[in-house]
Image 1 (cartoon, one colour):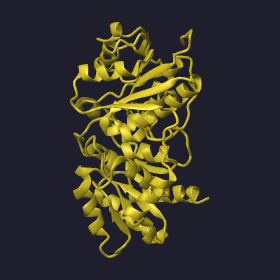
Image 2 (tube, helix red, strand yellow; image 1 turned 60 degrees about the horizontal axis):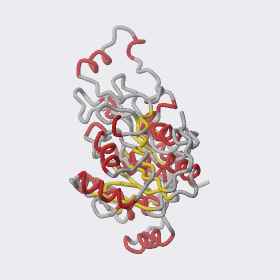
Image 3 (cartoon, rainbow, N blue to C red; image 1 turned 90 degrees about the horizontal axis):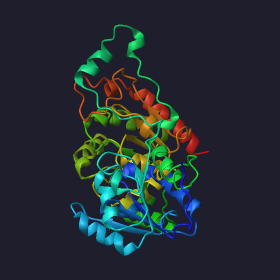
Length: 377
């Protein structure tokens, strides 16, 4: 049920989520909120590490950031200064609701969850279509891979309405915003594109630029084997004469170096930028790429929200729940070996990693070629 506000809120505080991919998936809801309250000041509270994501974003007027480990009273003090008359709490944590309560924001809306409902003035009922990302036990996995009958080996289909973007859209719909899905959206400006071109020498590459993101912060269960990435990247490069930009965080430097060294016989075809870019630079570089080949990780959401097609290897997680872009967008390709135990949502595989080991190089190469064909039309 949506709320009716008389008068309409003039200053809305949105308590943002804490992870890069999740933050990108909130953008459709924020755009709908902007359309519903075009005259309101929209202020976003976000972790410091994500503050630059919102630069130039059309749905956000102001960003308030907090540092890792910053105390709750310090955050609440910042929020009081914003003088909001309504707070929308996107995370489900008790702390996020307590922050806006301590800030004395008079109207506080968020999902009903244990240990926090009394902190909200409106606790929104959970979505009927929501699907919990349940971490499977070893016993559950063993039962799925050794079924009594073929019917038992099938993981139930996940409905389109279960996707995470609807979680945030329903929350803004409680304020009267349109719940219809939009494509996630981020923005970079021409000056930023020119800056990374000059800084990283992108204009020295004569062929198409493709991105390769072989890491995943969540854990090894989300990582397609590096040898398969190398084989796919070499085959695509041979077919297209493209050049690869290697992406990754500080923890992916060694992995990216392994891929770079594998191209030793093809000098000038790889630009290794793992651990070398800030968030705005990452965004601009992803915008320069025709396609991003990646595991399920934050940069895939960023790329898709910038309009760069993505080809994603999925193993322990589900594209139906957290795939990048607007669900059903034909520019994006999600690949899975369809192991009966997938998605397990575990950080590490407790058996033989069949969800990724059985995902072949040939299928990934063909998906990238199809994405390239669409991107170059």
